Image (cartoon, rainbow, N blue to C red; front, side, top):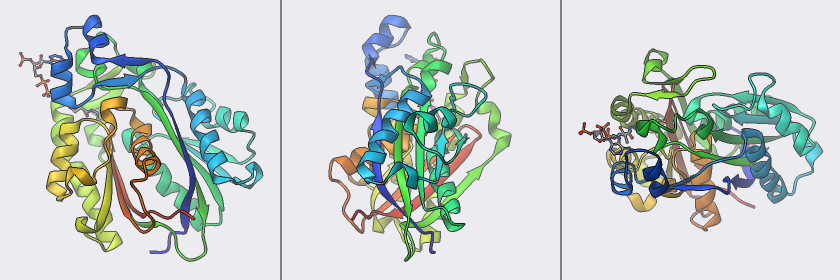
Length: 310
Ligand code: COA
C-alpha cells in the first residue's frame, strides 16, 4: 500500500507539576499499592492548557524536522479537551507557532493520535506535503478529583510530529480505524462536566477492541506480530496492555510502556510512548512499529509503520 509519508521530527511535552499516588492518597481513599497493582501507574503530570502543551511539543517537532515553517501545509490536533468550544484549539496553536496553513481539531478520544496520523496520510494522498500532527489532552480539567474510580488514571501531556510526503510509498503499511457509538455510555463527559466511566466494562472491552484492531492493521500490512519490533499501545492500564499483548503474542520486551510516569493522557498517550522509545534509541530504520489505541466512543485505531529516519 503506497501511503506516502514519513515522520521527520517529533517532540513531547509534560506539565511540570507531578502528582504521585501518595499525593492522591492524601486527597481520597486510595493508596499507592492499590493503584500500582491495578493500573501500573505511579505518578502523572498535571497542568497547562491543551494549546500550551501542544505549542511546546510542536515547537520541538518542527525544530527537529529542520523544515521551514512556511512549508507546513496542515495541522491536525487530536484532542478531547479543547481549550474552548470554538474556535478549535488548533487555531491558537497555529497562530502561536507562526504557521499559516489549514488547521483543525479531531476528537476520537484516546484513539485520537492514530486517527490523526491516518487522516494526515489521507491529506498527503491528495497533495499535502508536510503536516503537523499533534496529540494533546488535559484530562485533569475534566476529572472529578473526588472520584477514586477515575482520578487515579487520568493526566495531561502532548506529543507531536511532522509527517512529510515521500515519492516511493511511505512508512504507513496498514491501518484501521473503528468506532461503536452504541457504547457511548461506558465512558463520557458532558459539556462542562466530568468524566464518567464504567471501569470494569471498559477494561473488559478494551482488550478485545485493541486485539481486533491490531490484527486488522497487521493483515492489511501483510505482516505478523513476529515481524513487529515494537508495539506502542494506548497507555491506559498496564493490565490492559499485558492482556492485549499476550493475546497478540507480543512479549512485553517489545512493548513501549510509559504509563507508570504519565498516567492515561488520552491523545498524548501513544505519541509519548512512541517518541520516548525513539529518544531512547529503541527504534532502528526498518523496524516495524504497531501503534494501537482504544477509547471513548468506543473508538479504536491502529497502524503498522516502518520506522525510517534519514
Ligand atoms: N483505591 C482503592 N480501592 C479502590 C479504588 C481506588 N482508587 N477504586 C476502587 N477500589 C475498590 C473498590 O471499591 C472495590 O472494593 P470492594 O471489592 O471492597 O468492593 C475494589 O477496589 C475493586 O474495585 P473494581 O472497580 O472492581 O476495580 P478494578 O480492578 O476494576 O479496577 C480500574 C478499577 C478503574 C482501575 C479498572 O477497572 C480499569 O482500569 N478499567 C479501565 C479504565 C480505562 O482504561 N479507562 C480509560 C479508557 S481510554
